[in-house]
Length: 276
Image 1 (spheres, rainbow, N blue to C red):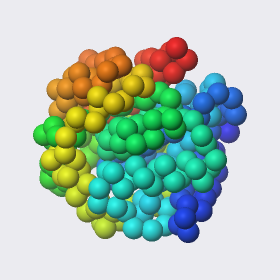
Image 2: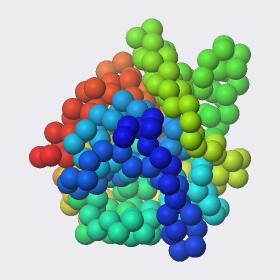
Image 3: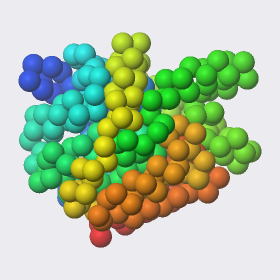
Image 4: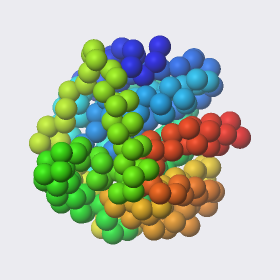
C-alpha cells in the first residue's frame, strides 16, 4: 500500500465521519500527519508519506469539516486539537507521534499540551507558536497568490510554498506532479466555509500565548525553509526557543514547503529523530 493507492476510509467520531488513510507497516508508534491551511488528504506529498511509511504506520486525516469528513470546521486551533484527540481514540490509538505542517503544527502543539500521555514525539514544519505574527495574514496571502498565479499561469503553491529561485521553482513543479499521480478515490476539496473557519482560527492563534509550550517535554523537531513567506522563518526559531526539548533544522533556498522540496533529507532527518 502506498500514498497513491491507500483506500480512503471513515471512522465515526462522536457521530461525525472523519476521513482518513493509512500507509505503511503495523510496527512501532503510529505517525499521524496533520495538514496545512486549505489542505486535504491529496495535498500530502507521496514522497514524504511513502518515505516515512517504509518502516512505520502512517495515518493521514481530514479533521471535522475538511475534505471528505463530515461536520463543520471549528474556528479555533484548540477545538481542532480536541477533534484530533477524539479521532485518535476512535482508532483506539493510545500513543502516537505527530507530524504537523503549518496549521497542523499548531494543532500538534495544543494536543501535546492537553494530552501529554498520548503524544510521544513531534515534528513541526513551517509553523509558529501562539502569539507570533503571521497566521492572521494567511487568507490575504492566499487570495493574493490566487490572483498572481492566475496571471502568471502558475499554481498558488509555486508562490506560497517555494522560493522564487529556479531551483526551488523546479522543485515546485516536481512536487505538484507528485500530487497529481493519484488518479482514483481522490479527496473532496475544502469549502469556502472551511477556509473561512480555518482563517479565523489562524487569526486567533496569532493573539494567543506561547507560555504553555514550557510544559511540552516531548522531543520536538522543528523544520522550515530559510525563506518562508506564509509563516516567517523567524517563528521557527522562536518556537524552538520556547520548547524545552527541541532541535531546529532550516533548509536552504526553500520556503513554507521545505519538507516537500527537500523531501529526501526531510524523510532521513525525521526517521532518525523518531527512531532515536
